[in-house]
Image (cartoon, rainbow, N blue to C red; front, side, top):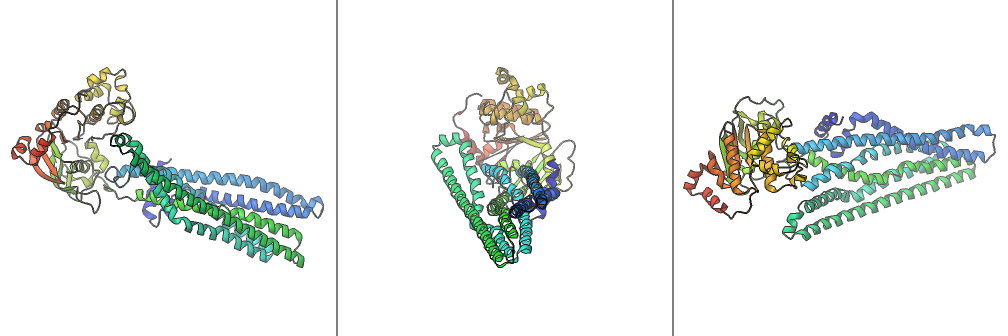
Length: 598
């Protein structure tokens, strides 16, 4: 059901460009009948409350004159009907408004998740993980006030207020004018003043909430590193400072809310007293009787029930508006890759991937992460990328995996530009393993079958053997049914990396990209694993991104990257003979062994 409403979200994002709040309101169009029911029910519930007090006032005032009971029958029945109507209509209003709000919240959250999926990973660096969590959870939740308190109650207050003013005007003209002035003050002037007083703090509150979530996430996620480097206190101090800022903003909002409620109550009291005194003067002059006076006074008192929630609701709507901006920032983030309207079908048979003078950047006006890189990955070809951190190696992988669009140059698949294919289709032919590959909190077998849900136990055993995990698996009581823990915390770093590598081998793509595939693995074992993988892919291309120079004599060509450019290229022997950057990097990599056999 939720998926069926994703398209309205996308269209609203494209068409309602005037503001994030209007975009959210636009999402209610498919449910406008249900929203209209909520508004109508809310108005009827509030109207029943006002009418109940007015009829009760007439009934008591008229009963004090001791008329025959038959004259009071209609009013007695009306009181019963209004009591029941108030409860029923309020229930329907709550049910309908919350149903609309929760359905839209579900749609927005799913749309945000899909948007994040399309942005990842190249479009994500502008957001921190804790910040995204706050936007996905807290900010989306905050927008429900728009549909629960921001649409129905103001409309209901307007309808009921107008009806109350009209009734009082018909009974006694000056009382209608006094009531209109009081309702406008409590329902418009006070909420607008409250919003103006807290506009800056509401805007800062959403951003502060995101910073606090990011700080706490950093502290919890990086606890081990913070302890290792003695940086726990500064990290906690930062989180505490952001927490104090949030507390101050919440206090300011609470003060404004209290003042708003107080001013609305004051306005109600002054108005009721004004109506009462004007009515008493009219009774004394003979232009008004006592029974209408009771009706006027109680109607004026009850009418403020419609506008009394508006000052507090206005502050909550200001928070919702700030949260909607946070959501819009994610929804409006530029696409790192744009799929064609009509993608070309993937080619059949052998696959050749090439980059020609490829230039890429992560920000529209940022520095080039790649500057004129050219390479070819034809069937059976084995190419390695080396270089210092930040040289552009992982950017090449991002371009090939269609996570990042080229600024200039071309990336081609069998001679056809990548832009002609959908990104998901390209990843069916080009995939691999990263140095921080994610492990799901599941069994080894379930983590492997992410690549192929239909893989048999024999296929799992085969790929585990290719990464030399067979003996380790045999020592486990549950074998491949062993749980790896959250992100592989129940196994060692080398074992986690080799499980991820086995998963990539199970997918068996036409072009396999290995980004530090043997990180945390003892070098002798690492070389054997790389040799086995390269030997088994005689008819398919392999791109090896590594800092391990001990296995580079196994590849056909080595590209040495420096600041996004190719500084050198050639075979291992040729580059060593040249005594250039490659030879210097290799000499620096000669360090004492840091890891034992894993």
